[in-house]
Image (cartoon, each protein chain N blue to C red):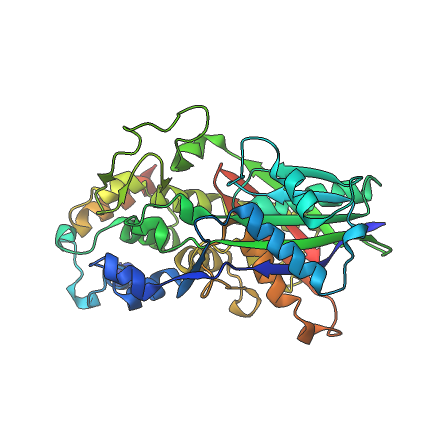
Length: 74
Length: 338
């Protein structure tokens, strides 16, 4: 998870220490560019491709992690 | 007889759109953020009365002005654009006349976006190696700026206008100088990068001109360019690495034996994601968009123009992989010796 959080922090332009499962995305710049960059990050880190629409609806980092787990289980 | 690229010359319109102009319009995006995320500092923008055909004509005239290619020697013209002057006649026919090319010259338009240059090379090679033409002028030009809503940062930060002219000619050689090719099409992605109105399917109406804001705060109408960025990223990451693997297998070569990799210059975040996914060394990987942006079918030839510069003369031939991908969805890849 470590590298994933560092990547997310870069995308959201916040410090890596602030990223946790509970982080609220809706208060940050969780826009279409962030979603695009997260698709690439997740593909790189976990070798799964997330759906952009589902990702855009994520409210917390935990929601992204749930999407990753679901894709990995497929 | 083998087809070979013998010259590439670009043309950029005079108008420009800098990150400072864009940052003033989009409160959430600073000048610095736009550069960091897109890799683009500046885009060139065609004048209101300057069309893709005008720019392509300029690029071709510049190419002839170098003195290395004679107008009379061109016996086929291919023009790749998604912004033709008219439904009919064919833009390439008018360009033939404006350039003073001979009337025994063939001329066709091809309507493709970011994959268009590679398709154009495939057609040019086919014409030459079948003995149907000896010297093909391949022009690319687009003016996406005319389709883009000023308040849609998802596309306005990326696309720039521009045109290029390439000469493909038959030469005596011991092996192919262009090819092999791989192609791909998935029209299932048509809706994800589209200008919905203006053709015959959906005429422009007062309703289609109504402005709407999306969840990221971007404003557009149905008459404007729409890009579903996440869907395009997913398509690209899933498709391009496979196409590259297919191409290397078809060419019987490897990344190690490839001197240069020139992918369609979409934007910095997409290029970097692809580079990492395919483990392409930075020193072989061309990034050429900082001062021009994403110029659609012209990105690959603009990058090639930089690699064909006179300073490189006599330094030996290199094998470059070219891969275009995008609107359609459509993609294609090839190798060229330059």
